[in-house]
Amino acid sequence: MKGQGSRTLRILLTGFVALNFALGCGLGIGAVIRGAPSLWRIAELFFDFALCGLMLTRAPALLKSQP
Image (cartoon, rainbow, N blue to C red; front, side, top):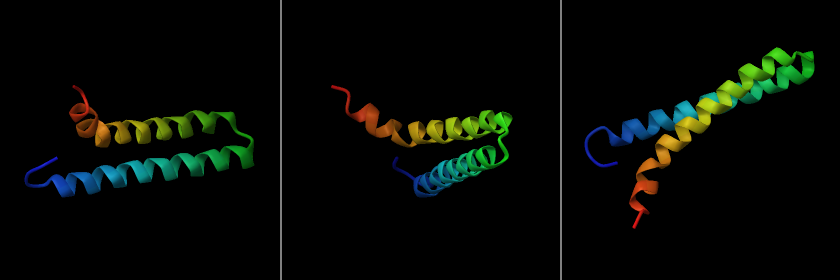
């Protein structure tokens, strides 16, 4: 990612991934403590958002590796 604002975008995406991962872990621990299966679905949603953010951050490197 080159150009103006690329560093800011990278920082925002990293924060997005870290925040969603932390929320997913927190809700997962809360689901275990409370024994509430409904919290697992919400925790998995946050993990899915984190994985989506990781794919977006890795997209430029993955596109460059194509022959």
